[in-house]
Image (tube, rainbow over all chains, first blue to last red; front, top):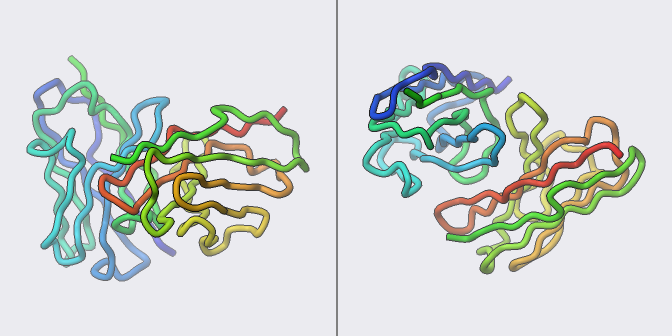
Length: 116
Length: 108
């Protein structure tokens, strides 16, 4: 069974940093692009970033470029999102998803709240 | 950036009825790279349809997708109680891969 389990969310002040993790199991992690998608409270879905199987290609939505960094550790079957210079508008549930452009499986998400 | 506009915003129907959800793109979606997701409260989205009309594994055949270019439709032929949820379309033909704002399908 495919499982994606996010962790690392929480309350952070504007300008702060946070690192999200996603532990993958039930499939061959190295075969797939991986993606972070976020959902602000009561709002729709927004693609944030994705990363190629070997980490050689990474893409970001314009609003997070220069502030967020996506990475992966294939030895640990894990995906990460390092977030810095956080803004209130980054408040959202962050989902990791299997796939680079079609999201075949999703984790349950981790809530990030940016507030003073 | 391709903007996807879903209509209606809310659709009120009864179990057993047919649901038709629309997704319109601000420009043509390359190779009909259009997906549909279902999301229930407190849950992650679930992939229903990719490539505009191909059902994902395990998705019942009452769900069907159609359309091309800028106009796409998700049809649920006979609503079951578990189908009441929010539905999102997503284009993945050109980056950034964008989602529509969602259609809430509620019980009438």
